[in-house]
Length: 435
Figure: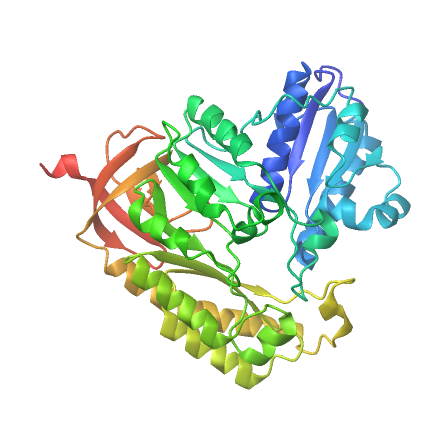
């Protein structure tokens, strides 16, 4: 039965998946708002747009279940229209149209003008850098490129996002200036691969050139780098991180594996020796840098010997931040031609083993920070604590600092002294409270 008092024609954007999807949702919402549409993010609305993820099996399942849930709500009269966009829709549109026909329309990752038209809005090319932010006011994602040209065997991203396409430096600076004017203090640079930035536009790797311009933006105090591919890493970026106080001493470099047979099959274009040299260079050029990486276990053909090499390497490298995925066998990827021969239970057991090693590393690292002082950006108030992050931590995926204080300004920087630690969190008090 239809709800009688529901406000009509409110567009609810539901975002699934990674920060790049969130960025796309913010751009969509900015366009809708410029067309005088009432729009909200993950709230109630009679028109629903689901921005899906199609990266790995768990993400695909979540996207399909979300679509089915809103289709059911449509059938029950709780919502009027359901549109689907994003990676899953780009990758499986014909199948989805056949299996879930009650969706009003499906759109791919590059169909923003068509989606807007279906929502009764016009695409406005002049809205460079305009988006409706869904993150807290003091930090924002800045997507510097779309798509990927890398040949990784396990990855379906090129199928869903197409080839690499950089956004011009001047457009990104304009967007950063607009974000800073709205109170953003931290920019989190994202792309499928930051290190490839500029090759298409400037015929060279231009990440360092971009950073030199972004640090000039008044109001931006932290710039954080996510998703840097190890092959072809532009070493001049390390010099900038060391020299520029605005660029966080933090690098997110998904390495995926380290055993040479697995790296070769993954088509990563590198070896254990070259990876180790790069990591040593990072620590030599930027003393105190935090390195975040992600790994894949259970890749086809991963032997016990390969896995032991991986575990020994994690112990040796002492990554400050690390996450693990179990391999997902994705159709139309190069690795799909291989036998998915590691049982699901063994994949999970291997992931658990690596994370048990990392838990001890993180615990020891955090314990070494007790008694030291750090600049912390306060994200929110939660229970008895104000929760913030050091420059070594990215939102949602890394450690947090729980600060005990009567009052701290959310969205501002505070100097704290660390008083205690747990495996993945720190406890602190404001330095001014110690005076």
